[in-house]
Image (cartoon, rainbow over all chains, first blue to last red; front, side, top):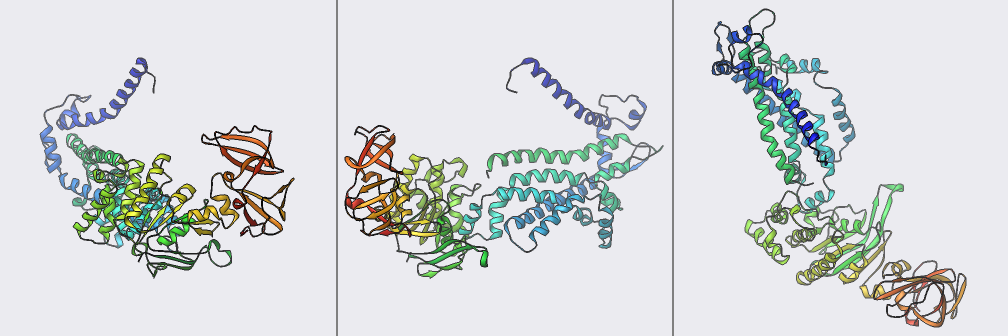
Length: 285
Length: 354
């Protein structure tokens, strides 16, 4: 808005504050819950909104596991964090690498069946993991990839979306640049590495953020392919801590784990954001 | 060393009977160190010809030889050429220095050799202060110089320029034109320069090639092309405003054009259907000459253009700006010296020597 109206300004801020509050309140509640003991959470109705004094203990139990006051054993979350991190990294990096290369092939090479291949990739957009989960599970289990990082990541790596994004970007790269590189004597892979990849830095950063979070948040697929607790990603771990029915749940530990599960994606967003902006400012098509 | 031979070169898109032929057998022998400008309207095939020399387009027929070596099947990088593109095609993420050094790095030249060449080129082009900048931090003229620097450091046998001045403003274009001439005088490298701008062609070329619809209409020095155009196309394309071309029927010193008959200052080379060419700057307003009805007078400062008609044929005359101009609707007389008359065959559109 170009107009300067104090009233409207106030309204705008009000809306923003309200929005922030709606997003932030559950997070705050999670944090407060993780600072109290399990009894405090269950007994005080409604739960106290002021932080308690059990912060260190809840987080310690969450991270390294152990037995709580009631003798219930909780598994350590630290290895799960590692599993999640490795899977998300492999998925994000793998998706980007494969999409970059396939987009490069589609845009810069003329080979028989090019448009057929392109349309096949296109069609996979209509087949997300959830739709093909049965056959994919069959394949993964026949290959003996259950309970492995490969089983957790490989089926999620192929990405039509990222291939399209890079394809669209490559199409905007002027032909003269390719020709200049040819005259300079750069072969296709040299051109790819020295020109295309640096120019795509911004898109790569953006995709990395999106795909890392996508990989981190996987729930359904790990639920199927992991049966061994040592291969659980953290998102599964949270679910396993919440016992259904009348069983007792250590809500403070669950809340601490939930916060732990949120931190790495948040860190990735914050770190990449700076890079992302730098990429936007520095590069020019 | 750096001679360039183009022998009966043909370019076709598609195959067999449906092939779309865009260049119809162009031949030219270009001596080492010569500066050749290819000029023509858009779509005449001039850029295609240049790109075939560069190796960016396949040659459908004929032969191109650089320094005596036929390069039809040689990769662009191995042809010993360098090219300056219309939009410069600088690598946006590399500094000026890296842009110039990239080709040399790929050629695996020693680091100090690369450095020496880049710094020397930067010195010649006055880019010394800008070596660390990125292309987007440069003005259009500076980018253009970087593109030239990238060509110079390769020390090629032939420079190829694909309309390198068309993205510059008029003032910078004139200045860069002079710089390119100086550079050519200094380096003495064979150059092939494509443009659609006849002023660039006239000022830069030692010899120029005029192309139209994939055919080479004429090759010669700018002076020769201006003074003795081989075809009506060249006559109409080179010179501003273009030459007046009047189709009519000659009979001795009588020339019959639609709606009028005029007396020629000298008899036509032969009788029959001919095209008479007369440059606007060679026509003079003389009482009692060919009667022209004035329709419009344009004031251009130093000169005036008088547009009018003889019979039904439109004619433009250039007169001195200080002369008092005729007004629209008036009928004036035109005269021309016999030496300045050009004659072309009405059918083949080719020049007929008087």
